[in-house]
Length: 166
Image (tube, rainbow, N blue to C red; front, side):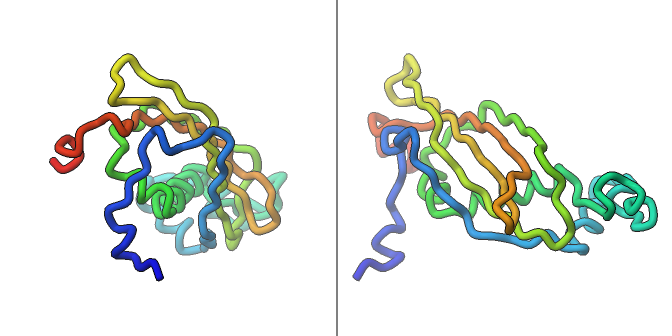
């Protein structure tokens, strides 16, 4: 039997990721409390998010969650996934993150993220590689809400163990 201790030191390097591989996160429901807390934190009190009467007159017919709230929760879901946890010590930097909002997220929608390894390229330094991920946030009806593309600079297996130990 494999235990969590058996995989505690497991790392995924740039070399281990295969373009075309898809990972799916767990889900999380976007709640009324999330929308209120995000509005307070960011001072984004746009009436489409916080005013029920106003929101009923919009094309959505009801209040919607802030796009950046949903994008932030999506990042949280992605970073809690096992794949990301195994990559955590081999990531050097996020180099780019582009976000496209496809459809609004409603209060009480449950979202998850599908993460695909899109592309990889070796850098001039053999200890580093670039990986491009496509993240697609979907609701409980499997409707696409957000598409994002994230570019990571990562260690390759050529990197010395001492570099990662520090």
